[in-house]
Amino acid sequence: MKKVISVLMAIAMLAALMVPAFALTEADGNPASGTADVKTNYDNLEATGGYYTVTYPAEINVAWGTEDTTANYTVETQLVPTATLKVTVAQNNAAMKNADSKELTYTLSGDTNVTGIGAFVTEEKTLNIHVATADWQSVPVDAYSDTLTFTAEIVK
Image (cartoon, rainbow, N blue to C red; front, side):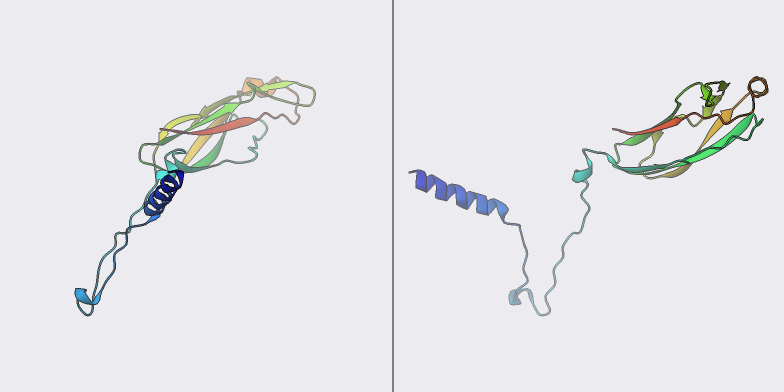
């Protein structure tokens, strides 16, 4: 009995593996022709939502004494129709610091929290780094730095 069940299961598995196919024969005429549909399937992307690239500068230089500096980053998406992209840019600190931990306060504005970026776009986004004149005048001339963190997330 177990052998019979094993043989039936093996036949069922083989039947499940068969792919429907069409064939042309002499009965179809000479010359014979048929058609096949070619279509995309993005089931493999449903779990992730698609692809994206966020390209940003490795370093943004702020010239000494300049109140406003702009920097750009680019967002490219290729997402499933039900997904959008969210990009956030955050300061590590509210100030740039030098080697002696002196702080140069700055604000970050512009495209720091962008939601709903479409399914198939290439867009340039702009950041603004603002250092007030009073803040420049309150610190000695030195090298100050901070880190910006870029985060991208597919939202379905």
